[in-house]
Amino acid sequence: MARVLIVHDQQPVLRLLIGAVRGAGYEVMACARSSEVLERVSEHCRPDLVVTHLGLGSQRGTLSLTRCLTASQRWGLRSP
Image (cartoon, rainbow, N blue to C red; front, side, top):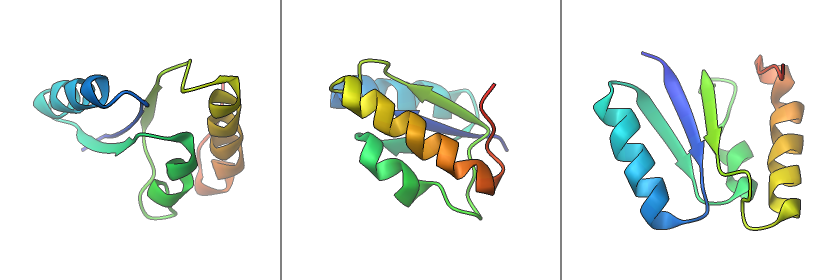
């Protein structure tokens, strides 16, 4: 089953996305803050897709998430 990581700082939107993605048959990992990403993504639990809110609280939040995901390349994640 494909894993989807959803990162969104607005709880109502996060819950809606989680429900929609799970309803489509995917495994969901969810984070409300970019700082949680490295806690959720591990060597044994890699997402196949990341869905995020580009505004993510601030420009720094989005930059932080991008840095986390780039650093995660050691776990097999690749940016386009």
